[in-house]
Image (cartoon, rainbow, N blue to C red; front, side):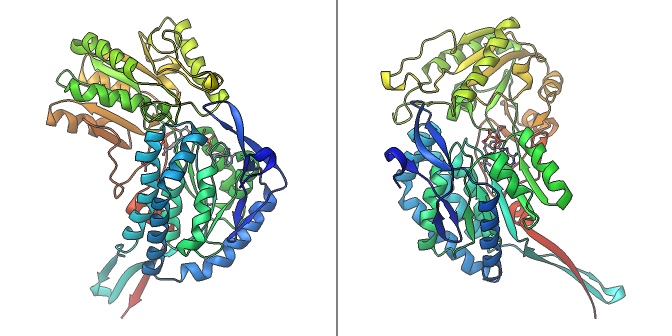
Length: 487
Ligand SMILES: NC(=O)c1ccc[n+]([C@@H]2O[C@H](COP(=O)([O-])OP(=O)(O)OC[C@H]3O[C@@H](n4cnc5c(N)ncnc54)[C@H](O)[C@@H]3O)[C@@H](O)[C@H]2O)c1
Ligand SMILES: N/C(=C\C=C\C=O)C(=O)O
């Protein structure tokens, strides 16, 4: 929809209707630094309307059979798939990611999220146990919780939002989704498909705006009993405080400081290109990206040389260029934050082997004010450095040597986060042993980011609370009750 100055103007989606808002935020195209869209700056009033709509829709939606809900999800998946190219173009413009990634990962995964939960909701069973000596049978039943608040970040906008919407509505809840104010467009586009898919009004409501205004109004609302949040650890702390008085159900998917551990018997021909990808895919703006690379000393020099060469081949380009490997970062503020880590590393005496401050970016004139930076490799950095401890969430990775298995496990575990790790070795025994000892919710060995949606996804320590996946999301989005029958 065209709005002020011919720019795209989004509207909230509440009770099956697009509704204008009294104030709007500017949204920037990361590849040019120009405002290209206006996003509703919603607050308490819009949350109240969304809660009302979600409450009204709950009895009808929750009493449909899983099969009926599944069919609606399947139709929505088909409609998203039919709009794949349009959605990919929009995600690429709004987020700064490459069109190739949007086409091959973000939007296909959003489609898959609906297909996957449309299927998995049909296959859950409940528990039953006997106590024959007391003449009792016990069993469990599950019911949707009610109105779910779903809050998502800017890095994988539609991918992560649909990873919450799909299991929530499949289980019979109604939802109020709040995408990141920085990347709202594809969520709004999805709303245009809901009616055609057969999603009744009020089942999926989307309110746009900032965390402090609309996000806080949503998480502190007394009639919203569960919150599924993906984002940063400081925001999770705030949400936990606000929701605590109401004892809400919380799922928190947070940041990481993910290690890659590369042993001397690793297949470097596979390890190097995959570790370049795991460090720099989506501009390093994936919570699962590698940012600490530990390499066994005997292969350290060879690895470093080949890794830097491969990183220099990783092409930074305008997001719409299908040959680009990396696009623009999300915002000027984020670009400055990421660059500040490289400055700190230099001050601490670390060496920057390629990227920021070493090599030169080559961009068309129109994109000079975009939020681009080169993939950057840091070495000679201490484990205590902020570059090795804090989540940078950008195209920056540190490479350091290690000597023994025991030492590297201890160093890999020495950060507050525990989301994802990769282990590279030709020894089957070693990969099992090391994977078991890592404090990490996910461990990929000799690969990265191969997802099995059935199994638990999530982090330990400051990387989060709870897990998402077929069974885990079903359990989170339902309340269980144990019933005892004496016969
Ligand atoms: N573990 C995972 O699955 C996962 C996935 C993607 C991103 N992340 C993490 O997300 C972070 C980057 O995303 P971000 O910068 O958008 O995170 P963020 O915490 O700033 O924002 C996430 C969402 O929370 C909202 N929000 C902000 N303040 C709020 C408040 N006070 N109350 C309610 N909502 C509020 C934002 O508007 C946004 O929609 C990184 O730390 C990254 O690791 C984690
Ligand atoms: N939640 C998932 C990925 C999160 C990525 C973070 O940036 C997933 O693959 O299900």
